[in-house]
Image (cartoon, rainbow, N blue to C red):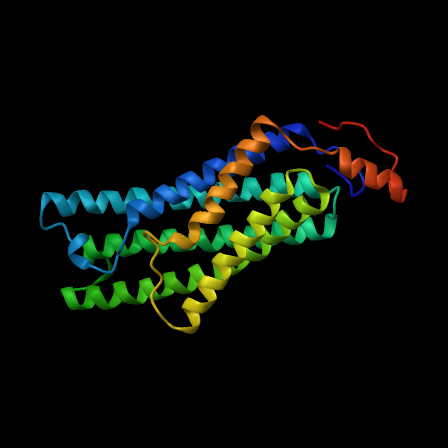
Length: 250
C-alpha cells in the first residue's frame, strides 16, 4: 500500500483504473440506454411478444447498471492507491464517497428489477389488479429517484476530489483533470436543479452525462496506454523536502 509522500504509485493499479474508467462508463451507459423509460407500463406488461422482449431488455439494462456499481468499487480503490501519495486523507474521503455511490446505484438497479418483475407478474407481491401494481410501481420509481439523487451527490464528491488530486499532482494532463471536475460539477448542478424543480429525472438521452462520460473514457485510455507522469510531482516533493523516496513500487 502506498504512503503519502511516495512518488510512484504501483503501475498495475494505474492500468486497472484506466480499464475500469472505460469499462464502467461503457456498461453503465449501455444499461441506461437499454432501460430507457419505465414510466409507461405498457412497455413492461407481457401482452405481446414485443413487450416480452422489452421486459428482458429492461432486466439486462439493470444488470449492466448493477455490474457497473460493483466495478465502481474496484475503480475507486485503484484510484485511492494511485492518489494516496498526493493526499492520503482526501483520497480516502473520495474512496468512501464513491463506495456510497456504488451502493446507492446498486440499490437503484435492484429497485428497477423489482419494478419490471412487479409489472410482469403483479401476483408476486399480492397485487390483484393493474391499478394496485401501478401504485406499487410508482412508489418504487420514486424510491429509485431518491436513491439516484443521493448516488449522484456522492459521485460528485468522490469524482471531484479524485480529479482534483490528479490536477494537483499533474499525473495526467491538467486539461483532462479540469474537464473531469467541470463535467462532474455539471452533473451535480443538473441533479440539484432537477430536485429543486421536482421534475422527473430523464435518464435516457440526457446530455448532461455526456461530458463526464467522454472525459472518463479518455482518461481511461490515457492511463491504460500512457500511464501517469510523476516527474513534476517528484520534483515538487524533493523541493519541499517531504520525501526522498523516488523508487518505483509497481
